[in-house]
Length: 201
Figure 1 (cartoon, rainbow, N blue to C red):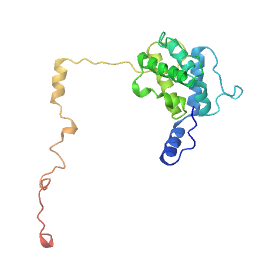
Figure 2 (figure 1 turned 90 degrees about the vertical axis):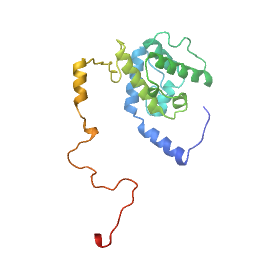
Figure 3 (figure 1 turned 45 degrees about the vertical axis):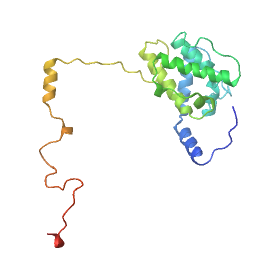
Figure 4 (figure 1 turned 180 degrees about the horizontal axis):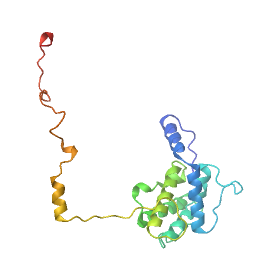
């Protein structure tokens, strides 16, 4: 990763907001879930201390291999070949393949993150949110392993008879207005001039 140096002004402000949204507890839960699904430990930067901060979280997932293994367990065949080379473009490719696998598994585009969010430690809270969304979709699809997040609701279509639909047309909702209470009678039309009399007459 290229060293960008310290940020100032608006960039610094955006960076601080992004860091404030990151929850270490949620990140730990997400990594624990990944370990339980994979049934193998992940490589922490400092194994004795576990996940210390958001940079550790980014380092655990940065090369994308853990994420690719995860999506292949939930959605077999999502990633055909996982890159094991340490070249930056191969690691980015792993992250990209994970994101494509998530989308084909059923995640919405707004639940995903950008490759740079993870690879450059920019918006790591979005990576955590993505893992929670993935856990929710996995529960909906009947994954029997460990659970993370809230199960995504199933569609609940309703079918009404013609009689019920006709009755619904007879109801006047509040947004249609009412002939009771305050109204605009006596008010000057919009854009029209007002006659102002001296002494308030």
